[in-house]
Image (cartoon, rainbow, N blue to C red; front, side, top):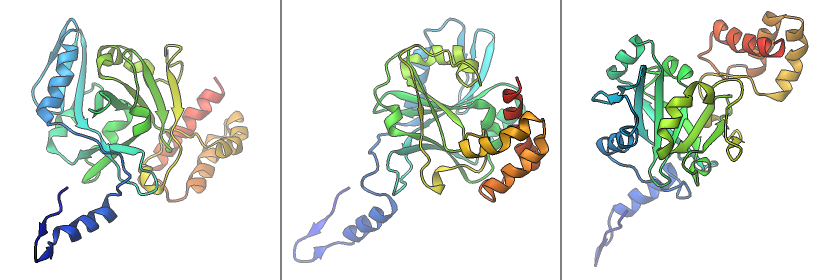
Length: 272
């Protein structure tokens, strides 16, 4: 950003604009470049064009086919989240858009891919959790961390967990074919089927802004220890009550059926 100096007249109002930006966007947030949407799609297509049976439609979001498998894909640049106490946090923002209507109607996975051009890496969020969040507000934020996006080799995957239990997968752009091939396993509850050199990194909880409006998995160790005896006795409803009281009003958009779903999932895993 330039500061214009007028000789004899002092600094222009540009300096005051710069000061105001400092308070809105801390200078210690990571500097990240972005590219035009058309260029971003080209970078995506040029990798998958090498895959047999690959085809794609126009637009964004858009449908792709790889053999007999179909996916809806939405591409977005990753940018800093500008959290004052957590400069490492990055995000993509999903705008409210009528273009998502076709995604709602299709019974196929909807894959969000955030692109970090500086590291040539891609972040993806669990397709099973995305549709419920589309068009619920003016902008829906999906989070990652800049430190997770660095130094990822072709063929490798990294996994991280956000503070609400949601899993993210990070990989090099060259690894796009393997990502679509292994998509169900990467976001599954069981073995991630990673190579020995791959990492799974817990993303520590930051400030309230970093959390989302929904909880997708219970990972709080104290809470799990409290409800585990109930779940062992198949008292799922009592465990749900404890969970809702434990989190209070933190996840306001969650209905009873949402709480029951995640508690019952934990119940089934414990009693498998």
